[in-house]
Image 1 (cartoon, rainbow, N blue to C red):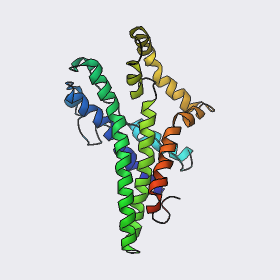
Image 2 (cartoon, one colour):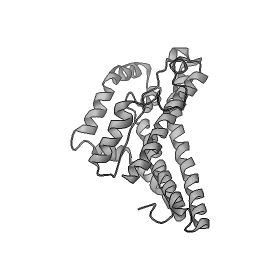
Image 3 (cartoon, rainbow, N blue to C red):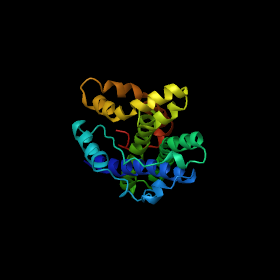
Image 4 (cartoon, rainbow, N blue to C red):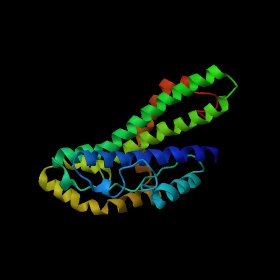
Length: 228
């Protein structure tokens, strides 16, 4: 339960930052939609989806016996017709959330190291609190890598589908967008049908590898019990 209380705020902040990045870049590209709907904010309340932001993370944590959780915020609505340059705007807005999660993973790694150095300097005094905070950064690194890689998957409505669309010839791109309305159904099937979850083990391998590589560099700064 302690770990879940550390995971949840990190996950919530990470998914909110992801959607805020979409809203901010869309606004910069000329689209006021998210701004007018109150989504251009880091306040989590406008971004929270009761199912994906609360029930799914809690359910996954319980079903995995406290080994894994995941979640998302409400997608930020955008209207590409407002972009000053459609292709450029779509690429920038679609990649903004992914880049944000990668930067958050890096920020968590820096804080992880700083907390480890502070904990060693303090010795016993205050090290318990720093250990909890460092454990939170441990989850932050992993979750933000997972969020970045997950959203890179070229399956509508994930961000990667927008990036992949622009690599296709126009005719193929139109057909690809047409089948996008089934994207959520495909995601649900791969999550819910026994045996198909192995697909995500493969697709998320880069996130696991990146996490392992990161902790191989910064793991020496871990306080006792943080990397258990």
